[in-house]
Amino acid sequence: MEQSVKVVLVDDNSDYRFTMGVFLERNGFEVITAEDGEKGWELIQKEKPDIILLDIMMESLFSGFEVCKRVREDAELKEIPIIGVSGVGDELGIRPDGQADFPYFSPDDFVEKPVNKEKLLVKIGEVLEKADKLRQRSPGQKKLEEETKDKYLSSLS
Figure: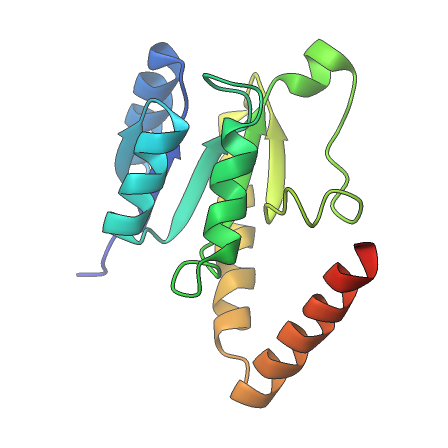
């Protein structure tokens, strides 16, 4: 039997956590939920999930951003794919910009609430496939990518 994909779902909306958790479980995922950024960070460290669905705006404006940043800075967790989830686009009329936001917020993909569940399943599949290919890189390629990223980040300072 194939092992199910472990998802950590971090969102402060209990109704969303419940409905999305049930939907994902019915589609074969193992779902573990957290209601805020701090509990989400603890779960991510403990569970080392295959993918993270992370609300951006929770108990504070930056809690989702902070969790994403912590994951990306942790050597053991940084390659776990993250899909950012938020209604911030509708509320504020903005969308995350992968390049401009990279040092502060670098999910692998982003979905707007209300989430189209079928599209989310497709996105999860795409993000997991991409993450699997990235994990298969050679040690030399990984080192080169880290050096390039470090140079880019230092040029922003």
